[in-house]
Length: 221
Image 1 (cartoon, rainbow, N blue to C red):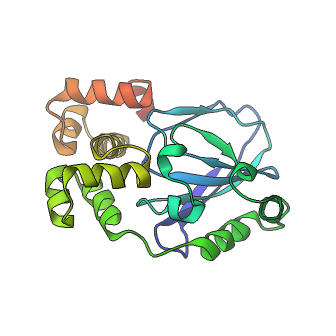
Image 2 (cartoon, one colour; image 1 turned 90 degrees about the vertical axis):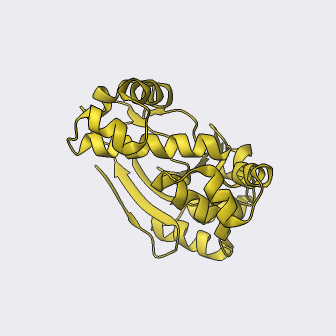
Image 3 (tube, rainbow, N blue to C red; image 1 turned 120 degrees about the vertical axis):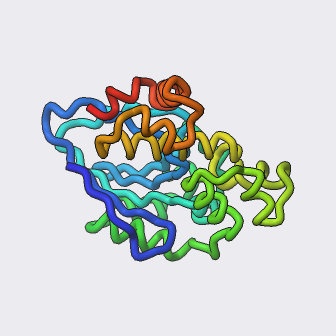
């Protein structure tokens, strides 16, 4: 069973999961975020992914996590996102043994994760928040850069540090997320390709397979 909800902290999603016996590996799609995850007393950081990851979790496992959106994660963790891209990093590789024990041994892991975030959070980078919002809405990257007063080169550097990859990759991932969400609501794939901003249905199919590793039809099933 999986559930997620907005944290009391801005730009943060809280989630939890329990794994019944017989649960197949879960396909986790890239989303431009990074997570700090407590799993059965072990704590690790899941960096931003460029392609889907298959997570095989032992039966009866419990997971609690905070997911950082809008590029705020690196300021909490003190590490640029591109150092974590496509990686799963033990928490104690980034933080002290005392900080790690505080989370790993917490009676309420989610409360401990949110308290950790609250202690370390900084004011979000408004340009990166705007970039994320624009990418989710399908706005052209050039227009986003101009509205933020950033050159293309400066935007790329800031985006890579905040999200783990450049703005074009971020926009492609957000477009795929929009397309999958529409398709899961039952919209025909041809309509999805137009509404999500693809050139045609073949373009939609190529991008989803490249990012998710499987066809859109399988994700919808």
